[in-house]
Length: 234
Image 1 (cartoon, one colour):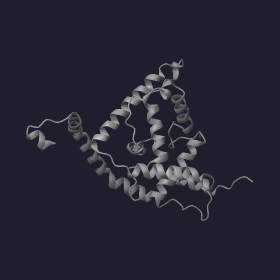
Image 2 (tube, rainbow, N blue to C red):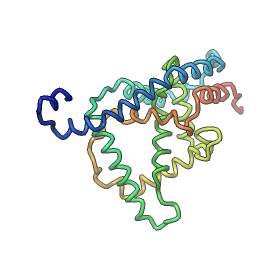
Image 3 (cartoon, rainbow, N blue to C red):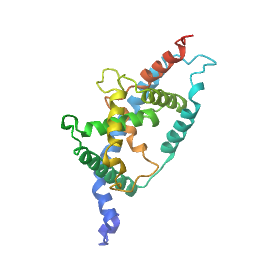
């Protein structure tokens, strides 16, 4: 595109948007590359201290259907590749959806507990924890990453009153309450403000698993191992 501009050629609107976004994208790539090695080393070291699940464990026996679905979502988001133009269009669409969701929330009579940006961030964060590979998980097997996803999914399905990350004030139950509120609003049944919602859905949220609200894989797998080894009541 730079060559086209230098040659005096006109760019279409999508190309102009891509040109404007290049410095930001380049800066993000540089930052991720800078953090990749130390984060990968730390994750690998943490996982090496996690005990392996007991042989013959039936921890997944009662939720094979959940595992199957999570595997599809996990690998589907992992393998999806989109063009820069698709990325920009998707981000614009999501910003519009967030704005629409919050605007619809104002029609509720309960003005004390209006939906805010942080509520939508929490929904996205838990979705990423339950279905996406952490972007910093170099050296972590897909088996271990998917096992961590399954652990978060179970806590979500049971409306666990547990923090999504140790030390966090945000719980799975609280996030489910926010999502229930969204799905009970007019926003859920109104026409979507933008139609660009592809199969890449959760892939762009993977960076959320590196936020302060996201537990490390060590903590998640340790909790899962504790669940496996805890005797069931007879």
